Length: 123
Image 1 (cartoon, rainbow, N blue to C red):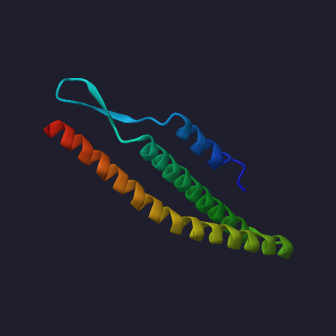
Image 2: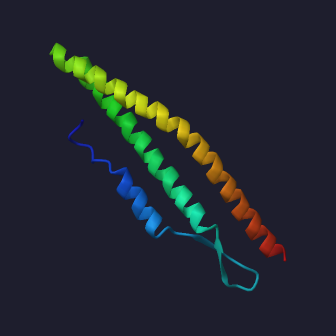
């Protein structure tokens, strides 16, 4: 909608993160580096980031459309903006619902990874 905003490409952002996801490492007792988390955790985090970026994009589009609607004099264009706002709002609502579950699942994976590291350090 706005000419000064960058175009959003959620599939590319997520795919780039998933191809070579950065895995955190921590030092172990013997001074060597240890991988924290799994490839699945990195993919889950990349997916959460991609979905979150898409939600931010939708919120920006809604905001831009509302500002355009406030100053729109043409009734047919105002009607179009109202339909567009309805579409953006529906997408925002549906994506929001799925994201909560994905965040909860990802947090569980993080907790498991932390427990694994703590267990390794104790033994």
